[in-house]
Length: 114
Length: 112
Image (cartoon, rainbow over all chains, first blue to last red; front, top):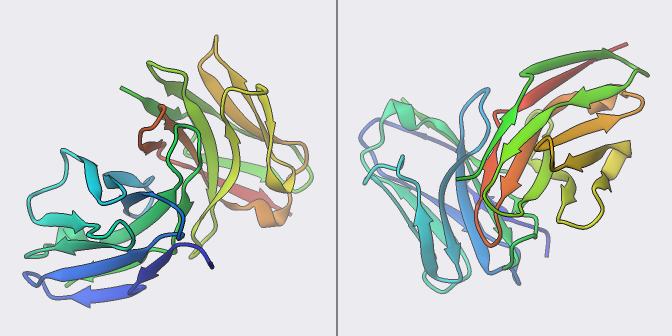
């Protein structure tokens, strides 16, 4: 296993279009997280899963954002009707269940909305 | 609710001098604390973690951090900076079985 994999690495889209990102976690990890990072800021929590169950979604996340993890393995993050403010790096991380385990991050998907 | 504050947005040091990156946290429970590093155009990499064992934690590349409950701090140090240490550093807090909360980051510059 080579770690957390995210695809695509870069995405340029026109405002109003829908986009979908994919994250493949480390295979034995049952926790999966999505974060968003803008330039000069720390990663901001979006949502996370325990297996296929979505445990929490950030209050800051609009209804245009949805995430799934249908079989408890890979996850997708969809943004509908993209806006220029959605331009950011979208990071995925995975970890083992438990209170003191670190998360391993993917390289991220950089979204540019034009 | 848990939160973390990184007290310096930028730190500049000369190569070979000590590094201190400051972090304070807030948590209702016994938290886990982490430091991650992010080099330009690279992914986040774990430097070290505190999980209620030894209060002085050693990490990779000569970094270490000390958990001080009375001061709610988890400062990152390194005795001698190297040019390759130049990067963005994030302090992270997590309550048991909960998500990771990141600080706003500290950009470390190392001058020759």
